[in-house]
Image (cartoon, rainbow, N blue to C red; front, top):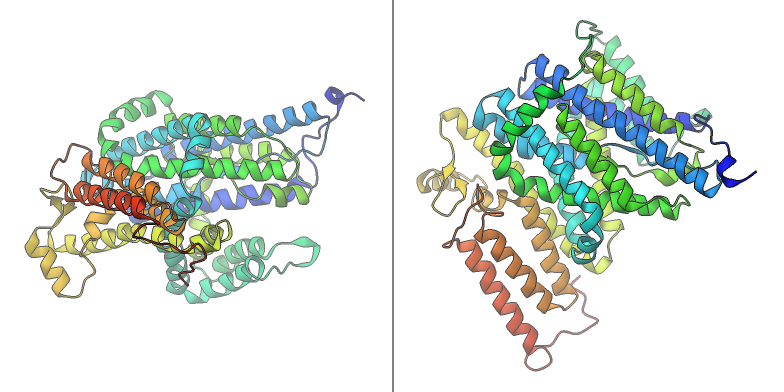
Length: 521
């Protein structure tokens, strides 16, 4: 039999595990989006279930089909029937950043769900374009951004937004949350597995739904089921309107999408190591195109290649889980099934996924980096905390009808009197507003500087600080909007750091020494 004549099964028993993995995690991500938009922000159902969810589903449908096609092509090319498709779905880190870093502040600033949605789909489209460009510039950036800086910043997002919310949601209803958390942790952290290879995480999700339903915490509601085929004409018009609104948030969108395409690159590289030689560039193009198409239909969260290819391959998954999962998720979104799921699934289910994903993000940062760079990871994790504190503090103070404004420095904060009042009363506010703007980029910069200091490359510290000075000058970091800030104290501060670093670099071996075997811990 020639390579081109090899038969590749469209679905096999090994695909059942892959299908469970794809459906379970994507459905939980959908529920997080629904809980945020419908529950927290009170967006109308017509917008959430009629536009956002179907748009996201179109993106997942297309990506599931395309990655199955990529696997089919690879199998034909290499004459193998054991090729495993790349797992893909909603990008969880990007989802949280878009929800809490873009949509939530826009919602409260604009007080118009439909205008906020238009900005959100514009953000998603821009993110897809950035990820598409990653196919060209990804390898170049990967060589120049230290992994500790990139993964540390994302770990900070995971810890402060996801882990905390997960634990808090569990204890908000301990009768439901604690048993579900225990069963999930037994499998995720302990490695236990039930007979016939049922993962405890799946048992926790399915069993948790039944348990909550039996206790009356949730209910079955078919009222939202219908036909919600999105109208691209409406979405594209809103998309165009949203570009003008979302420009100040490019400092949030671009860095997370840089992370997204590097994550795709890493995950495809992992699939290559497992024996399936996929094109990294093609995968990045596919993620970008599917995300842009999703945004054109109303979706607000980008797609990405997921972790887990090696495990799926080990379990015998082929191409079936990818295309079947895409079709099922697409149909569920178009026919309004997620309105049923949102009423049926308790918050604790989403909480255990919050916690699991955040732990994976934090542990991955330390696992994938050199021990000597651990300090850089820790430093890079801090700036995302400013986003969290800023949201909590401004939300609380806003109850008293006191709101932030753009200060002369470009920072979105309070007048001196209000800021001092908060600080005097023990509120951690000093520097929060300054770090909040462009927190992801700031985390990457601080992590990068720390890595180069550890590696005794003060010349690279100077280059990084100079780049940060330019970013500050044009408002990409430390400012509420893009512009030209000639008097920015941050641009001046970074410039001083650049000069000092270069002077110290020139002095090494003359009046400044750095032992090669130095350990800071």
